[in-house]
Image (tube, rainbow over all chains, first blue to last red; front, side):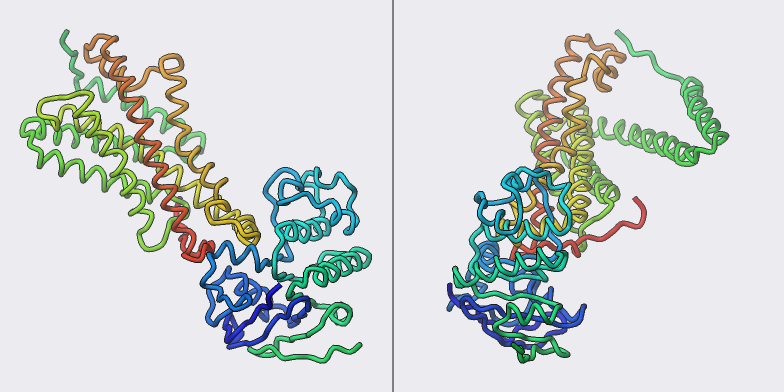
Length: 201
Length: 268
């Protein structure tokens, strides 16, 4: 998959940030709450107006129709919304292997969405997004509502997927331990800039 | 058959009934009496004035005066649409969208019914054109107001769903289809209900009026059916246009949801 280049992007408090997401590499972004991590992801997914340029491969964001851009550069929010009756209706294609990998029984696709717990919603939202075969993942705290076991399952599944399909990825994370486990690059929001941080292994 | 005129004391007897109701609701502390009295007074004043205007208009009967009255009715209806919105679009867009939808649908259908179906001489003869336009405009106004209100309210409340659908790469049309469908249904439901129940549950007002005024029921029924169909078409096309335009207005050119384009009205 092509890399995602971010050039002079300004959104919210962030000023003229530059960075590149390489294929198959996970860039962890951390920062205090309210520092604009989610808004940064929303700008990259073109859900908020922003200045600066974003390129997928060599093609700038503006040359794509907005919905085509979002199908490829897919943001998965920490709090997902569900609108159909059952889980499976939200998937583009059936995802039996992914359901199994994240600890769901086979009939989970037929579950009613109004009975899902927040942890189930978060894991199913990841599966839902992946069913659309995105080229870039923008993960907003993908394990925020999960216990330790589920967190481990999700980390394992996501890192495997990112490696297999060589997806450039942003992973917004709070936990330093998680950053150490998954990150290839760690950027922290300091004032109005992104600063590269050492990942201690 | 001649029409039995009503005298003023007969009308004041009917007004006494409303007054009695107001007194009862006041005693029961239901806080309805004030708006009841105001509405009753408005209806008396408005209808009396319209009666005078129509008398004059029927006497003059030129296209210019018919058009002027039609324009005034349209602008008032547009104002009514806006005042019934809990959330309206900034910058007068709700008024523009509502008025334009009613202009396109109610006016063209009125003119079509006048020229092709009823065919008075001349086609704009106020005795036919003004009541017909009034009924179409009134019903279209209700449809547009209900449709827009439902659309803006539900899209504002469900912004999470719409944004999540956008994140999955849906177009703005796909992401908003359920809300547009609901709004369309809300706008058309009163008309569909009244068509389904007409004649059994209630006798439509216009037909009742015509029969009271001495028209034979068969003729009155034919007019009523014509009116029902034109009202349905007018309301349907008007609501459709308004909902389409308003939902488009809630997204920008990059298909982002812009609920900040909505302004909450101070009083409903």
